[in-house]
Image (cartoon, rainbow, N blue to C red; front, side, top):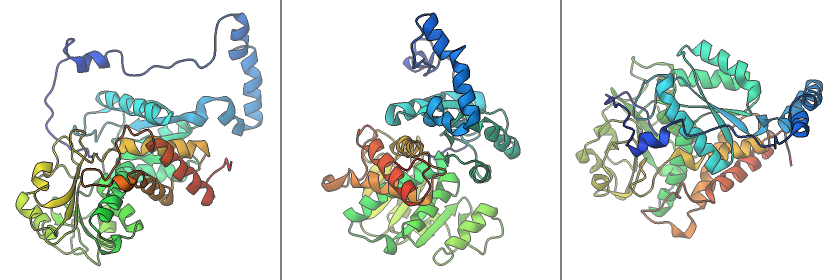
Length: 399
């Protein structure tokens, strides 16, 4: 899932269009979980009964996780600067996407999520606002915040808060890519340690994919941006890209995307650009191509299939859809269930392996990743996350 700045065709609402009809009034609502039928119910849920619960929480703030919605509620926070396929459209225009994200949290993970669209792009203001809102939530899901600001925002919030903070554009994408790659490697009889990987795109997703692949044992990685392969000899790199250059220095060499793809085993596209068929044709035999830009993949899957053994996209109308919805509901479900203090790299890798394992003996070129509608996915991810959190000492609820 990749957000890029592209020209957007402005559209006026058409009341007869089923898309606009579905969105009328928004896609979600707040519903009571307790009855409110008479004065007795009112006395329990509100005054005077509620005062006793407030006093108990004041005496022991930890009890808020038992007697309020905090333990099962996530804030979906955006500033609208990097909305999937639309780019910088602002907080109000981002709300339909944030509502959609909240609906997915509930549908697939049973997690309540509240869209929070912030009318600021200032890093300090975003961090301060989220920190002040944090007592309302059990976790923070950052969404559609442009790079490189997203890295600093996430880092500072992780440092400031003792609840899970997860930038889904980075880590959700990375986890699903790793899950699909685990099975693609198995199908093509390769080893992670021997892979030659090219990542097209050095934004939020590209950076996180690089990190998780390195954690999973991949060492030969070239990351490419608009100016070519990122390497230590370039003098136009920001702090994030300089780190990428250092991490990939043993393998990455100066050149274009075409140069990098010669003999490569894997292409992961998270750039929104276009990669020529002639370049894909120079990849290794039985190559693996994940062209994830939406709505237009860097390489059309029909074209990529001429040269690759495994092809995946971010779209639902082709085989092997790499979609963040496979992991973020289960990751937060598991983290909330044990009141994890953070979502670690090991928890992400465990989530990826759990998703990959679900494919099992049905592994095929057209099936290296389960469907988002596979009911096994979120529970498997949640179990992997809770077990890892407990093993790493990050769970405040041990049982």
